[in-house]
Length: 110
Ligand SMILES: [Zn+2]
Image 1 (cartoon, rainbow, N blue to C red):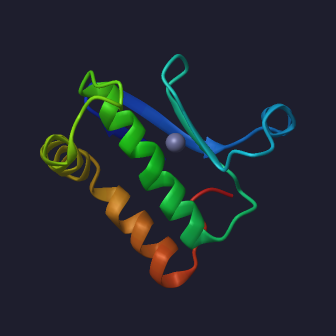
Image 2: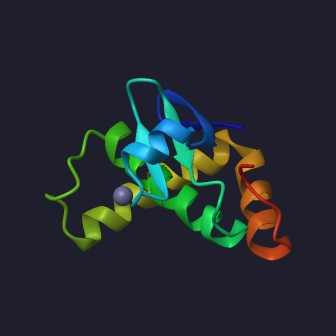
Image 3: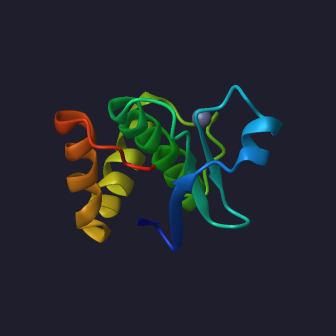
C-alpha cells in the first residue's frame, strides 16, 4: 500500500528481519530517506492500525515542517486537522484499510 502524506508517497510495509534485529522495541517506523512506513507484522491488526496512524502523524509533522516539540495543543490540532484531512483525501484506500484492521481483524501488513 502507498500512503501519500503531503509531497511524499510512502510505501507501507513490514520490517525486514535485519531491521527487526537492529531495533526490537519499535512496532513502527517512519523513514523519509527511502520513503517507507514500516509496521511490525507480528502485532494484531488493531495495533497495526494504531501504529500506522502514529507513523502517519510523524509524516504529517515532517511534511508540515514541524519538529514535533514546538507546537501547543491548539496549533497541533490545527496542523493535524488540516494534514490528516489531506491524507484521507489523497488516500481513499487508507480509511478502508484502517476499517478492515480495526473492525474486521484483517492485517494491514503481512
Ligand atoms: Zn513515534
